Image (cartoon, rainbow, N blue to C red):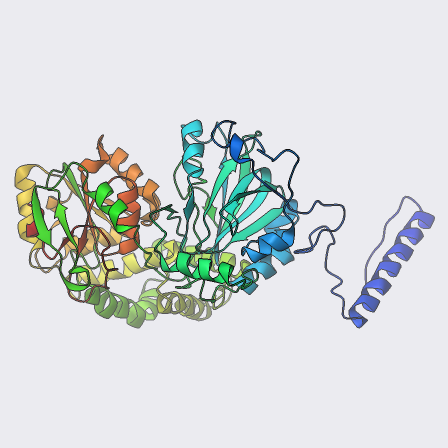
Length: 559
């Protein structure tokens, strides 16, 4: 039952009668198979309640490069583009209630249906984006992504420009409440409108990736070829699920920039990714010109999957930034020793240390992460109760940890607990951080030459100190100048490397040498202008042929 109030009994009676009418209508709607919870102002893919349909038009080529990019640049007379044309290009649009985005069941349904597991919200405006005028010109460069791009305008607005089948520009006006998906392989660009303000939600499948591949360097990408073939053949792309051939690796969509500091990746995430993905490199010619600019002291032949590529390694650098897995340490050590130790011992570790403030803080962080996951309807998320017996809470916490470990998730709360558990086993002598034999001589040489060496890993800084402090080559921490983790930014974002270079005081970012085995990390660092070398170690993943980056099998190649 319900209680109804009013200024007098007549008013209360009227209120009750109104509610009774609404309840009766809801029951009849359900009997007719109509979802009575739908708000007509939020209904997906439908224009209702007076909200405007997505507006698009052909751009005037004569105004390109003449008028400010933030102006509409319509043809005269205007040549509108209807929804069907956009759908044939693979563009999907929804009209939602932006004011209700935090608790919108229709947004949640879209996320669940299309597998969007990670979101963040960013603001772009002159007062939030240093170098605003320069940055918006960067966003306006024509590019594509290897994954679909999803944007939801919560306030303000802007324009997405997409190429049609004849390579003409179509401008799409993005206003408050507009949510759009652009397929992988479509050439496009983004610009602000004259309001110079956009607040947008970015959505991704899995780990967020913002790598943009500019035209014409991306013409040969498989995603571009697939997209062109589908468009030319008239195959409808709109409505494709993320598991379709257009989304080749099940990973997150990308965008160029849209960050508060002019880089990729500003904003608060509401759900973490489910896997560490590998992205494709940029066109080999572009990669070589970026990674070898002003370099080339000694040519090194690549090996393994990239044996056909020969790119010089630049040995003129002022600081070194090292990845861990696959670079300093065998991937097998992390996967076959560190993670199994955690999985086998997390239950006993929680039980033994349950009353400590550190463990209680770790569990609380896991609980908050689980609550956010459940709210975002992340499949497999395990709730951790705040009340109950210690055994009940511990079992739930263990189940959450094992689930995250099973999908190779690297959430902050999980990494924090892992670091505390590993610290216990490192200090007891049960774990020794495994290092490649060439790391100690290289560290000694860099130390002697006065070259600072830093670590950048998705593992927490505490975990990084442990693996180098308790390594099978001894305590290597005296050779290291600092540690960076994802608090400095995701490793697949160019802005992260710019932030690190600024933090360590490198004025010329090309003087920073970054060593990694991950192609998507190398793509991001190269985009930032970092001197990047791919490491080919036993057990590392294969590289794309003719990727255009210098490679090494040992650190001795870097001297």
